[in-house]
Structure formats: C-alpha cells, structure tokens
Length: 193
Image (cartoon, rainbow, N blue to C red; front, top):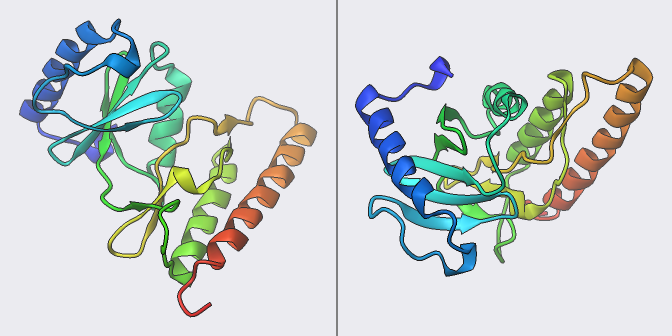
C-alpha cells in the first residue's frame, strides 16, 4: 500500500482513533451514538460503517477482520482510476481516500458520456486483474464534482483466478453482461441524451 501513502503522524492518529472506536463496537449498531469526535459518520451498508476523518474515509468492517484476499482486492483495484485509493488497514478497518460527490441514486443526476465509458473500461479491467464485478447498482457509485464516476463498494467483487479457465470464462461473460447493463442505465442519465 505504499503507492498511496500518508504521513506517519496521520497513520498514528487514524490507528489511535480506530482503536478507541473498536472498544465501542459491541453496542448495537443502530443505537451507536458515541464515536470519536474527529470522525464524522457518513453512512453504512450491510458490511461496513463509513466515517470521514480529514480527507480520508475510514471503513469499519462490521462482521470481523479483513482477510488478506480482501486487502489484495482493495489494493489491486485502487490502481484503477474509477476506484478509491487505499492508504492503510487495521484488523477491521481500512483508510481510503474520501470521495466527495453525489450518490448516483440521487435525483436529477447528469452524467458525461466519457465518464460512463471510463467506468465501463475500468470495470472490464477488473476482469483482467482476476476480479469479477458484482453488486453493480447506482448506490455503489458516486459522481464527483469533476464529473468522474467512482465505485465505492467492491465487497461483493469475486476472485475468479482460482477457477478453471472454462468457469472463469463463464464468469467473465456474465460480468460483461452486467457491466453492459450498468452502462446502458448510466447512458440514460447522460446530458443531452
């Protein structure tokens, strides 16, 4: 993860905050109110709670430690422009870049055709890296103020490298169909469409 580094002081601060936060986790998630002052609650999905710290997103995994395979996936995909960059990880959390923007589920979103094409290109590149994109719905994407579309949730992306070539090809074909379907839905939101 050296490719996207942050200062040692900032790493220490994030680790301290997450250590304090970890002590509070046994509380039921819905009644969770107390969290360190420096963290701003952003939201949660099924697998993670997300907080903002400075210009970083801190993603806390609700159901246990992060596996090495999960870290490999995050690190590999962060090399692609459409995915968030990972900075560091703890036992049950990762620090990524915080991506400002609007969720694609927001009403009156307008996309640029080139941004949709770039996202589709990066989704296809995932397959070349051995990861099959899954869970491709608008809630897992943000539109940055610059117009770029970013994927913020890769939890259900599947490692297909461990399967036979025949099965990998079936997974690739299935994923390409899903990517094409996502691209068609997004193109309906293109300005002047």
